[in-house]
Length: 207
Image 1 (tube, rainbow, N blue to C red):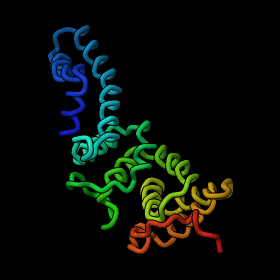
Image 2: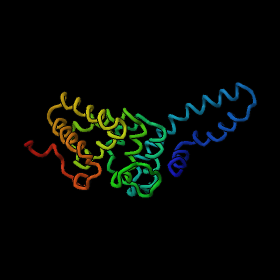
Image 3: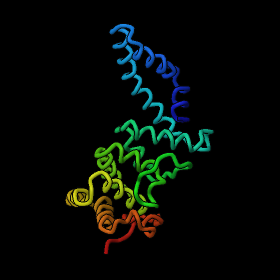
Image 4: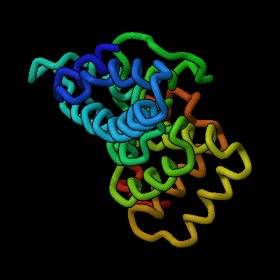
């Protein structure tokens, strides 16, 4: 709720949402209710922009606490915000500062807010992951990417998707996709040896 409060204070237009909702529910004529519904739909984009701004700037150096960043990330997942995919993928290792959501299996993974939000967004998140691994990533990040793909697509389809992408890849992306496939078979997102490995497979010569 902190993230929403900050988003509203960041743009006065959002402070009118409560009044608009009351108008929608009032039943005082079709025109008022239709106008209210249209205004609410339009405000969604403004809310998302504000949430992204909070998530992108939420750190202790500028006075915005990490909890605000975490809650904004949670909200972006709730909104199924596809335009947030690149940000969420880039911040996959950001760890929660306060438990707000549960339900993700795996004791090492559920503490990463971006993970659940990407899973909520669904298949567009996988496209963002596959684009991200064209550049060097840490093995820990690759293991968590595997988890996201597995949770969205399932065991067989997720592995098939990675293998299909590997056929088209070269260079850094090829090395990292192969590493992801190897970890995927072992459910590497549950293995501390992968989740504590900050090295990049792309920086190592292939055997």
